Image 1 (spheres, rainbow, N blue to C red):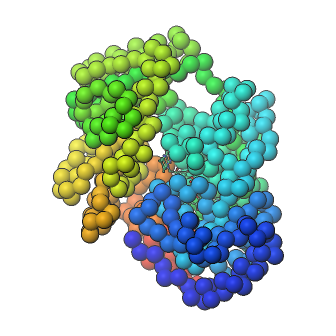
Image 2: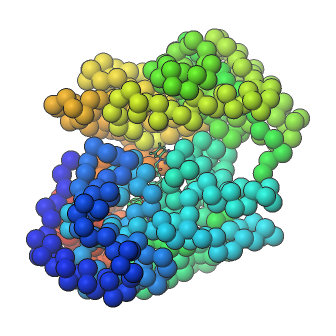
Image 3: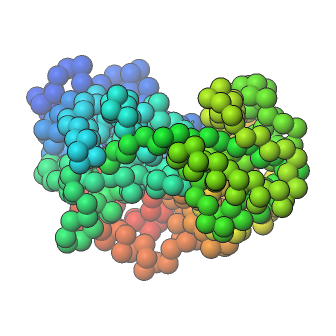
Length: 477
Ligand SMILES: Cc1cc2nc3c(=O)[nH]c(=O)nc-3n(C[C@H](O)[C@H](O)[C@H](O)COP(=O)(O)OP(=O)(O)OC[C@H]3O[C@@H](n4cnc5c(N)ncnc54)[C@H](O)[C@@H]3O)c2cc1C
């Protein structure tokens, strides 16, 4: 994976830029000592590392604006950063950039239960948004597995999803407005405490824009009353393909569970060793969760049961208590951490039509054998959002390159069957060079023309999303 060479002119200006930043920010909010900037050298895509030139930790929208004006004035690239949990390298620095970390801006600014919304500073963690409204029995629906750490700004930038997004939608379906600081320091409000406004859907453009268009400092989010109850069922199968077909049948039947999660044998074994959730001996399992009143839950459970029985399951385990529900979710929720304990891994994030699940799982198995790399599949099956985890050895020469090549083949396969390169993790650097697999030159030109409007000097999060050769004429200018 190629990154641009650092601009030596910018590196030579470091002390001038630091001095300018210290005029608008406190000393402890500007980090320029290389031993400390190193803490920001990567995000959760740890295969790639590069310490930034400077890190700033603003505490207000005005400070963000001041920082961006200074950086624009000196031609310094800025990489916005939330919690740094991106699996696509979205927050990876370049050596000549300023990392703008939003995490200190984490206050709740307004809760409005009558209109079912909350306004927060964008450095607030995802889980603590729900935490702020749970006393009134409300919650914020998008639930990335990283929700304890990741922040709303990162969720908006990546249009993040989670296990329960099958029913509630991803971030874009739960976002009402943002305060955005443009690269020139201008502060704009887009959307607000109301449903869709007139005019162009700029909020839709900002959500998922990966820190390319501006820095989000505040967000207005939809909150929902908690459902009366929820219950998962675990369904075990003797092959990936049969489990995939069962998912397609559940969706086709029009049942709308809140979540349908898929785990294959390698993942089940690793999670079982790690979390001891008591999963059955099987090749693949689904965790299907439904919610509502007890009668609604039972009705959906019965319909799912009828569909599952047609696929000769090894076992169906309907939760009957809070403790059983917790046990069913335990292994799934610890999956990424558990795999991290046994191997280095790259987590892919392609989306496919649900009807293609069985076929794609079969071809991933073939690719795994072809490349000689172990793969585990754990993903949000209900919306076709695949997460093959390709395991490799970072200390073995050539293994990372092999893993990258296999990852590219898997993502090409997702596009080939009518899906797309990313479901919820974003493009970042990870899928940047595959964008031409999915988009024509004209498609990419339109996307880059939008960046031209928001960030004419291409200083915001450079080297991400667009293949370097494709964006070269703009970044060079
Ligand atoms: C164990 C694990 C599990 C995960 N599970 C899920 C999952 O279930 N679903 C899912 O969707 N993702 C998941 N992720 C990926 C990741 O958590 C999400 O992409 C998350 O939204 C990133 O948030 P962050 O705060 O860490 O952002 P960062 O990683 O810091 O940044 C992500 C992107 O946001 C941009 N950005 C950050 N702050 C701003 C800002 N203020 N304004 C504009 N742009 C900004 C950055 O430039 C970057 O492009 C997982 C990651 C891990 C490590």
